Length: 113
Image (cartoon, rainbow, N blue to C red; front, side):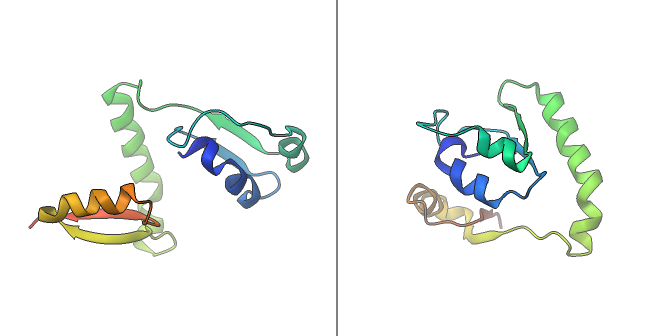
């Protein structure tokens, strides 16, 4: 989701014959220079999409499909979310500052009492 800012990191982390799905451009949309032969040499399948212009129904269906296809992996702990920090809802400003400062690795959770 981070687009240009993480292009090189994402490229280096993808395996040969990997599928790369780019679903947002929070980190920018323009690369200054990239040799497309690098993608071709790894035989990477690159798909790009944006969720913002999609309908609420499309996003709800996508969420449901994701849940139905992955819940058993989460239940068996094959997949686990990466949680950076849990903040109380009263500390929402601190949580936002933490995120703005780029201090998080993983999700920031707001706990509602």
